[in-house]
Structures are given as structure tokens and as C-alpha cells.
Amino acid sequence: MTRYGIICFYRQVLQTSYRIHILILFTLATVVLLWPGVSRVNAAVLDETIRIAIVKSASEVTVAGDGLLVTNERGDALLMSFPATVKPVQGGLLVEGKLFQRLLFSASSAVYVNNKPYRGLAELSVADKGILVVNQLPLEEYLVGLINCEISSAWPIEAVKAQAIIARTYAMNRKMARKDSPYHLESSVVDQVYGGCLLEDSRARRAVLETEGEVLTFGGSIIQAFYHSSCGGRTESSEDVWGASLPYLKGVECQYCLTSPMATAWEYKLSLKELEARLQAAGHNVSGLYDIKPGGLNARGRLKQVVLLTARGSSTVSGEQFRKAIGYGAIKSTNFTIKNSKNEISFSGRGNGHGVGLCQWGAKQRALAGFSCEEILSYYYPGTELKKLSDINGT
Image (cartoon, rainbow, N blue to C red):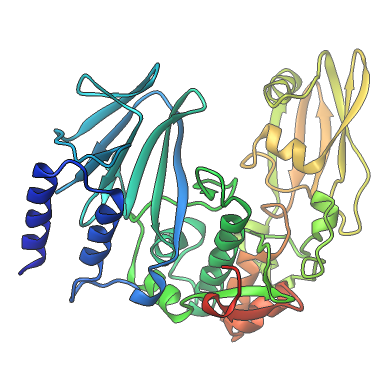
């Protein structure tokens, strides 16, 4: 029977039997993915799945795709026209005049959520004043889609392989920490940037295949594999940034990234009024802001705190809290200076990201210099060891 024939057969079964469990639906998707001739990662690692929040608090979600299979919260198969528009209402999800608590979509190729393709399952439910969409898929397929969202797969292959390993490590660490949560990761800089399967390519898949199942460990446990775009010459210790001391995140010299475009100086300006508005929107109790000053520097030369001067007195926020409030794309790192000129604040800095763990641009330059992915990882995460997921207890 052809792959198309299998899909048609299961669709007929689903249309006549309305109590098929979602496990069968997911098994069907896996069978099609593994059909001979279809380029996919090794079947041995497809058992490990990951759940990614790809849409949060949406007022409307559109779902489309070829050969979509749909079930409700009870596992009943549904007939539905596509593209389907789903809206949150009191009591659940509304689509085509019918109310559901949860909807699950799967396809032989991809499910399109808001015009973006995703492999695996798309699960819709109501949470946080809107629709939550969770993409559940095999871990290795997730990594193939992630690579070109975080770096470029055109980089030296050893740097791409290093990215695959740390992304897999980070994902598994979060999966274990959030095992009882609706999802394991978000698809943004909050965790790892992921845009579905739109940016998959052969080099991304090669890097994932050549590092299949490999994660970084310390003392036998999967590490918190933080990473960032460019450190600007020196990576940070986790203790200085978040207050938690981890032996493999102590900070190292990184002269290689200084040749990257992301290590060059950046500048950002905004008015005091806008600055106050962004701080307030982020939950900081600031009123009558008339100036800001740099606080103390940590051992790596980055700002530990920013001092806010207001009509009610002064207060401080950490450098990372300040970046989050103003915008990570605006204040690219905590390695910056501050200047107030006629109520317009200028920020000048270097680097991009929190600075902890692997420096992506530093890794690229190290790969160009001939370092292997193992050498790159051991430099940025000293004392760690590469292991297969299958060799780690409790995963």
C-alpha cells in the first residue's frame, strides 16, 4: 500500500469510528514520517518528544494543511473544513459554531498554524485569556527546525553541531524541570527560538543526525545549557547574572567573537517618558523618572544594576531585569554605558545576549579555526561530558 493509501485508509476509519484515542493519531503521524524514502532522523530517537508553546493568549487561531486529522478532548474524530478559524469563548474553543475543550490536529507533512508549518501535533486549548497552541513533536525534528532560527546552518558544520547539542541539552533540561506543565518550552528567546519546519534544510538535518541523542552532562546530570549570540569578548558566570552558581558556567575569555558583526558597538536611544512607560509596563513601580545612572559592575565588567532616579527617590533594578523591561532587542547586553542628554537617554554597549554559556559567534569563529564541536563545547562549559540520552538514567 502506498503512503497516500495509508493516509486515506486511516481517514476512512476515523470518519466511521468516533472513539479512537489520540495515541493512534500520533502513531499514524510517526508511521508516515518513517515511511521509506522520506528523509527523517533515526527511528530510535523518535520516542523522545517535546512540547513547545508556539502561540499564547491568542484571540484567534487559523489552522490549515493537507490531509489534516482532527480529534477533540475525548479522542473523537472530527470532520472539519479548512482553513479552520478557532476562537476562544467562555467554556472553550469555538469553531464552525461548535464548542470544544481541546482540539488536536495532525497531518502527514505539516500542520499550518497561522500560516506557519509545524510537524507533529498541534494542540489547541484555552489558557491565559486566549488560545494556547502547543506543538508536540519528536525532539530531533524540533532541533532540525530550530537550527536556522538560532544561527545559520551555513556556518561551519562543527559550530552547527555544537548548536544542535546545546539546544537538545537545553530542551531536555527544561522538559525534566517542567514535566507537569502544559508545555516544556516556549518558541521565543524566553527559551529557544523555533519557527516550525519552514527553515529546515539538509545542513541543519546533518548536524542533528551527526549528534543524534547527544547532550552535555555534569556529574552525570543534564546541564542547564545556556547560550547567547555574542559575549563581546568575555562570557559571564551564571552567579553574576542570575545569582545561581553553576560549576560549568563560570565565564571564560572569548576573543574569537570580537571579529563578528554582533560584537561591534551598538547604541539605542529613547526619551525618559518612554523609558518610564516601558518600566511601568514591565511591572516596575516607577513614577516621575527624571534620570537613570549605572550601578556597580561585576567581575566581567557588566552592569549589575541600573539606578532609577524619580520624584519619590531612587530605586534599583538588575541589569537583566532592565534589559527585559526595555526590550532584549533594544538593550542587547548588560555591557553598556548610559548618557542623559536633554531627557533623551543613550545606551552604548557591546555584545548581544546575557553572556552566559556558549557564545554562538565565538563558536563559529572557533570552528573556522579548526576546533571540533567537542572542543568548542568543553571550552564554554568546562568540566562537562558528552553523553547519549539513552545512557542517562531518569530521562
